[in-house]
Length: 308
Image (cartoon, rainbow, N blue to C red; front, side, top):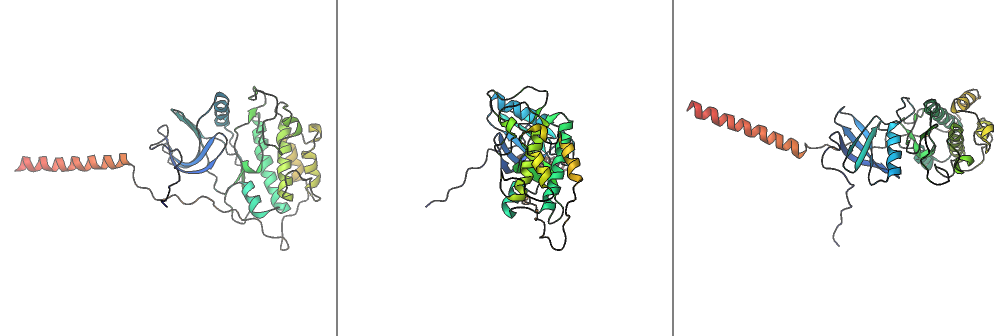
């Protein structure tokens, strides 16, 4: 039976928009694919999100996502963008440790101290996002990315601002209903309420509860985080902490365990991206080298003829 070659992802032969060379695909989402790419302007390897076929609403969301430029260590925000023909691309920092969703799938329920650190960093990120007048609207484990840290302290970064919206901006939805991911959306968000930072607080509480229990939708467990998570995930937004900053302040007032000899080791966060393969120069470089060598030969012949 003849061997078949899997179809190669849609990748241009040259730099996209003259700037981004797509190296290998590392992910995919509702609006497009995510690639490891080299930015020819800076020389850095970045993550490039490429939008393929699109309608006006998808394109508007894409443009809004690239416009979110929040400088914070726990936020992955776009750093540049470009467009060429039917492709639109924007670049952001490359985060190599995978997502919290993958970590949970591999390790199951996580230690309280570990979850507290992840929640702390998530709330730091959300506080910066809210201070910029933006509501994320899709806080979930898949959008919480991790830097490789081995078995040390985790370092989390909030990404994917595809459905984020400025609080005072127009709505992107055309029909009644919520924008976000089922299970993490606050009840009023699922019902189509206007964006509100307390909806992100709810989602962060749902994520932390899932990390502690291993189950989405489980009630907050007993323990030092329980009362705070119960407040964050209240169905009544008026009973939640009024902001991510307020929830963060309450979190840091808790007497939380910090691990010790009797605690199981923290989950290991590896570098999940393989090394880039050695690449040979492009055909354009080959052509330039050939032209250069040809010029040298012609010059040598000309000198020989003049001297003979």
